[in-house]
Length: 459
Image 1 (spheres, rainbow, N blue to C red):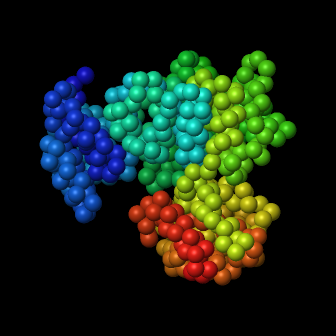
Image 2 (cartoon, rainbow, N blue to C red):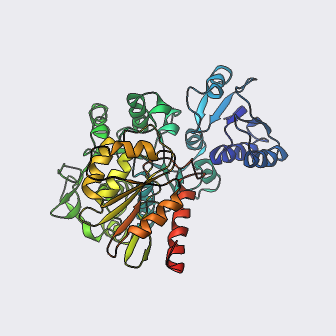
Image 3 (cartoon, helix red, strand yellow):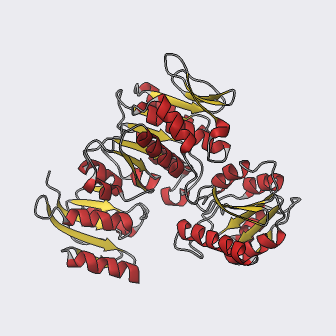
């Protein structure tokens, strides 16, 4: 199908990949490729020069779209109310996300994973389980390469396991995975979507095109996710209900400490929860969801057991960052909202904990998190732009946070306060943009600091 004149909005990783893909089709079904971004930086200019050399028209620092285009592929970083996207809707035949574009261009089977927290771990684990079961699979989207990049070289029958955000789902229309997983819906990115209701509706779009030959995996322990079940039942979409506390026919649950799938026939025991290599009760839920998704794609019980037992923590998600003088350090830089921090802290309940919080606030309510932290952490250290806001949330509590300007200062203070047997957890609950380009850069900086402690004995 001809795409005509294509506009790419945003020159981040996904925009760059989408533009390169469209340029590869200019002799077949793309008439022209135009790239626009409201930003203008050295990195963007470097990318723009490369795309321009390949035949694209690139415009940086533009506040709104001018001209007419048949198709617009929009970056997930552009809010729906931004002038750039609003103006694109007026002059483009259709506006879609990169994940929607990749799906339309793909011949691969898809598995999609969404939720406020846990997406990356679950996506990686599903990919691992599929490969353990002899089904070629690759993680794409927010974890892994941009989906359109994977589409370009996907092998026949290779499953694309996509971590998809609410930003991406908001601009989908035909996106139709074979298996769709919804982990949880808690307040996050409300400023982008306009309301929690809109955010939840966009998350729910992962199920929009599922039919009776597909599978929806839903963590029903989460109230926000559970609200999606009645509509799925009404549409007769097969559902695997995931719960750590209750058993459902056809579900995935924990029974007497054993992870279990419960198909219509005999129950299938997987592995004891203590055999999981990833910490936290929330990761038990994530592992159940991943096992259910892989089972729906045809992975055998034996391969599921092997894969669950062999899976290791991934970077920036409760990742062990080193041990120094009897103190264990953990990198959970991906925790950019209070709910993610709450789940991470539960993994350390009963153990002396020093918690590092901070960065740039996303407008979150830190009150409930402060109450929980006061009952779990021995010491809380806050840093970055949001430090005063977070300290205020602890007002009147028995614990009084230490305050620092930077992450490096927080690590130094934690090192001075830590005792043998303690755990130090970087689980910021905030965005990284006050000090770092992204959460990955923050997490790697943290690990470098811990490594320096180990090598020098001090920070």
